[in-house]
Image 1 (cartoon, one colour):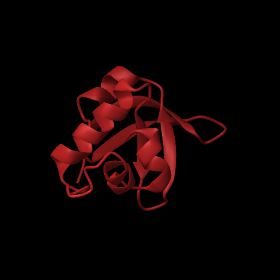
Image 2: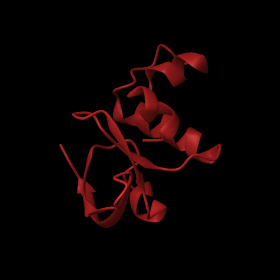
Image 3: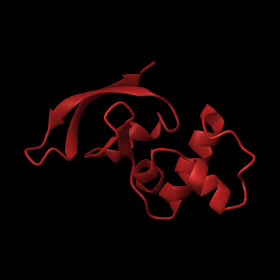
Image 4: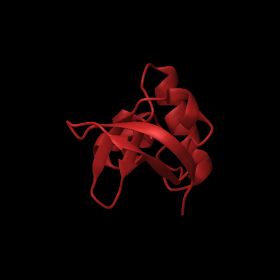
Length: 94
């Protein structure tokens, strides 16, 4: 996700804000479009863990780009502050 949408846990608010509230925020194409738009405006890719409602910054922005809008499984090391993940592997998740 992008940080703006991750802070609220959904793309729905941003879509509504830009006049696209009729789009399904859970559709993978919509997630991708919304995230890519926010990244182009200066955002960075983040991992949003829906179960814990936590947002993690990701150290390697190029590795995650191909997974925009998808659920993923990230393997890596969490920094001591617990906010940033050093990615060793990323793959599609369920």
